[in-house]
Length: 132
Image (cartoon, rainbow, N blue to C red):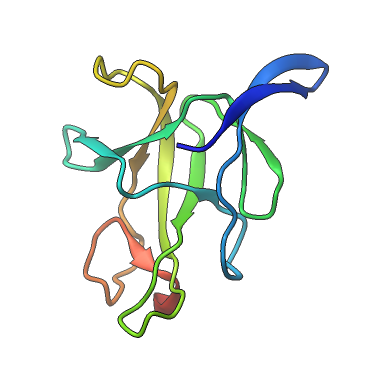
């Protein structure tokens, strides 16, 4: 996970977690998600990942984003295609409060939602920038 520090936000002292920026131009502003931090599946088998230890994160364009329960977010992770060219992993999800006993330092998780379209990846939840 990225660095966390005290941060002045909307007149209050809050905690902010700096997330990675995209190494390429994305289709829209997205928040970085480490796809290696898978932690569970929900009752419908949707994947859940560790997301943030703080309430404020930055998106791929550097904008501050305040997380809250039920927030819909677009996420990305830097990846390479089979030719070692940048090809970001993309997904959509919903922010949920951490319910895991094993990762108590993490405040927020993300539950991925199914793609609305069928992408070449064949994955119901994750697709690649090159699929767009």
